[in-house]
Image (cartoon, rainbow, N blue to C red; front, side, top):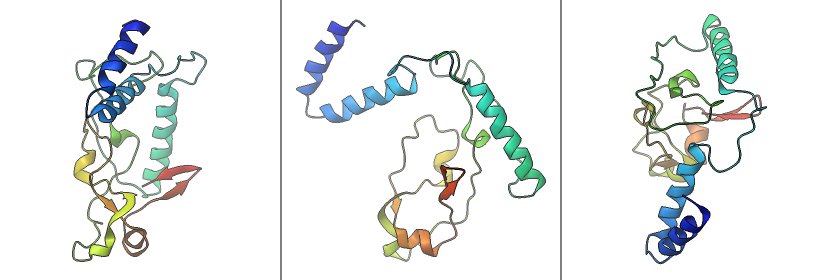
Length: 158
């Protein structure tokens, strides 16, 4: 697609009632494919970052801070599209620790409908279409319940 074709598509989309939704989906699609900005070949490749994460997980395993899991790698046939050469496909379970059983009480309506995204464990099972969650929780739920959200080494963790 050349720039003129893209602008024609943009003009057409802006006339549609659902134009903002489609434009947002289009931009997200370009972003996850590495097409929004020019790729810098001097950037650290994802494989190095995944090795660092794996080493950290081994340390957490040895300290019994997380439980062991076996996660199959993504095969080339499973990859839904091509990504830049220094990127790498991985499963969510390879980069995080998900736990079930800490859902805020559904009996307390004050726990739900806030501005904190609530990702349920069922939404994290290698979902190819994970864009967030339909459900949110309140700060009261975060303060009162056993689920986790916080900062570790300058990164937000849940």
